[in-house]
Amino acid sequence: MKNEITVIGNIKVFERDGKQWTTSLNIAEVFGKNHGKIIRDIENLECSQAFSQANFGLTSYIDSFNRTQKMYDITRDGFSFLVMGFTGSKAAQFKEAYIEAFHKMEEYLRKQLDVNDRSLIVYERCHQELMEMQKVNQEILKSVSGTINNMGGRVERVEDDVSVIKNDVADIKVEISNFKNVIPLNRRKVSKQDRRTHVVFIADDRHGECPICKTQIVDQYKKENDDFCIDHEINRHERGLNQTWGICKSCNAKKSNGTLGRTERDCRTLFDSYHVDLQSWQNKRPRQVEIYQMAK
Image (cartoon, rainbow, N blue to C red):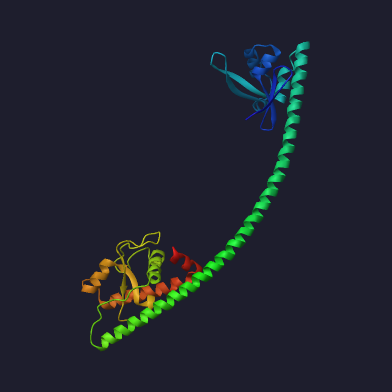
């Protein structure tokens, strides 16, 4: 976009890239010369190529017959070099008018620069105040998050206590059944928290795969698919997570009917390896992140 002013009749000067410019078309119009001759004069100037490239820019315009015609944008120095050979009283008058136009454009740009400087000061002050407001907001959010995390921790501890009680009751039932030489048919109900822990662990540490057959049972967004299930190790004495692991339904079914193709010792080795990795993974995860993941 051009900053353009008109001084004395139809003399036009504009600003671009920090320089003051006019056009060969405007010079031809003001000095009453043929534009084609002005173009030839520019192209025949005996000046260096560097000076010509810096002060004469080839461009175009649309004439009254809707045709594209050649034109040059000319800087203040290029104008002086071009018109120094123009003679006569009118030519001198027009030279003075152009010089005045260039001066006025320079003054206009200086005033604009002052306005921009003042605007920059106001912008920096507003930006600083905005940063202070954001800092205060972050402190408020941090305080609120801390309160929420504390509440979440208390709720989680209650859920853990309930889960432990349920497991104790289940252990008692198993012991009573064993005492009566009755094989327990019902498996324990896995808590929502324990199930979610298996899902996130398998997604993070096991690439979402079943630890036995490597079937994809959890996707990258930590969501279980229809093939995901929890298998129980009911003969073990540990509580909670230590008696379960996440595998696919197919492996779970094959383990139950003895068609898995692996010995009980192999399965126990995989189970123990799974829980060693699970314990290591849990130790690395901050408690707050764990609460957040379980809440999702």
